[in-house]
Image (cartoon, rainbow, N blue to C red; front, side):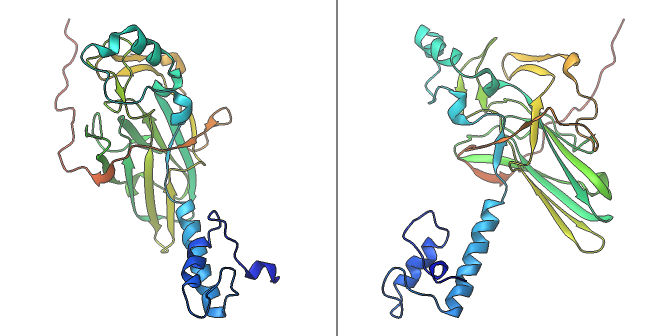
Length: 288
């Protein structure tokens, strides 16, 4: 290791910066740029690994960043204000992708039989979660509505029966829900916390004890879903010609899909949903 690599600069972007600040307060290292002892190098290495683990933690992801979405900020678009010419012009300037339902997929491999596995998902604009083409849970329009600047509900599921040795795929379809109301057909209000977004963490353990973690990060891919319009007030349009059979199963060719982008996501604290989920309680056959 070169002498130069044994010193720290004053750049705060350096992952060792905060450790260096602590060392500077030590009587044995009173000045910036002090050489580190063996024990201090060990501590610095732990800090570096910590930063690396944070960098690979789950992120909010989607098709478009908040900056590129150009969605009008604020919660004042109610009581007729949303229909003024100035307000309409602002909302019309929002990128159409910022209100588009999208599909996201992540393919991964398990080198063994599954002992246990759980997935926790947060998608404040509603979502449908699948594993290897099978829908997870019987929830409808989840997660439940909240004040997204304060709380974002998560849902956790046991997915061990849906996983298998070899290639697996987690798929998610995102909507707008109450998180992103840009109207378009009818709406009581116009307000948005951002474009459709996903936060996900999956952990699996094989029978040999090996643990595998899948998180929402930039390795995911996205494509437009067959849902061409969706709004909690204005309803939904579905174009079956846009379906992509097998998109959420192993072996699907996602070459034409796009790389996701990292998003800021909602400001609220992630909390496991406590209320019972909305479900389909009964189905009625078509009558002649």
